[in-house]
Image 1 (cartoon, protein in one colour):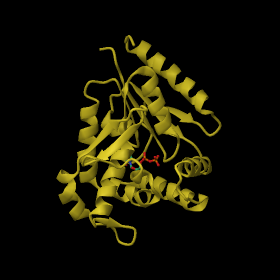
Image 2 (cartoon, rainbow, N blue to C red):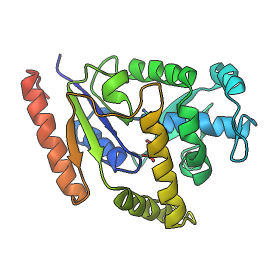
Image 3 (cartoon, protein in one colour):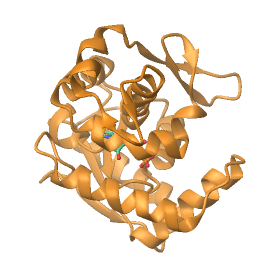
Image 4 (cartoon, rainbow, N blue to C red):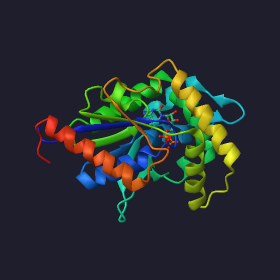
Amino acid sequence: MNKIVIAVDGYSSSGKSTMARELAHKIGYVYVDSGAMYRAVTLYALRHGLASAESGVYVEGLIRALPLIHISFSVEADGSQHTMLNGEDVEREIRGMEVSGLVSPVAVIPEVRHALVAMQQAYGHDKGIVMDGRDIGTTVFPDAEMKVFVEASPEVRAERRVLELRAKGADVDYDSVIANIRERDRIDTTRAESPLRMAEDAVLLNNDNMTREEQMEWMLNLYKERIADNGCVK
Ligand code: CDP
């Protein structure tokens, strides 16, 4: 065995996706954004009248539709990864506030979680994978050789998310973004099925005062330690 599984969990907008993606790129691993999969299911529900901002999620209907939802990832010429829903590139749409407002209620549904966790575990079958999310180190890959739990204050996370959305041309205000972050934190940490919590063997990273470069150095050092611990060669 010469590759490991790396699980990166943490709160919404903590920068974990960027870190996980960069690390995977640097070490030649596959990167999987598990949150994008929950977002794609949410978009499907919105488009098919199975969820709306006014009436929430029609749980029975969404469970019945699960076999019709196919999620995959495509790698673009510039190296970026796009989420595909039934063959359509939905990368941009799944990041919008409409999906963000309903994704956590969708992600509490046990049947949705079981379907997506099974897909995520299949991706990790051959190791050499970095996956980020909420339950990767606890439920998806409890035996992952490297587990990181990322946290940052809600204010710092909201500022980062506003900058990210505005850079993509979205018209968002700080108050609605921080309200969404707090609400998702609440739902994600209190749900019955695999709630967001730090795995006992995860390493905590608070990145409130860290630059992107400092975080990457931290991740790479931990990766090298874990590789050495596991007697792996890169
Ligand atoms: O990008 P951001 O940190 O805002 O969130 P995300 O990683 O795209 O995940 C969106 C939502 O999906 C989270 O707030 C969770 O409700 C849910 N999720 C989950 O339940 N389990 C995962 N492994 C990943 C995401």
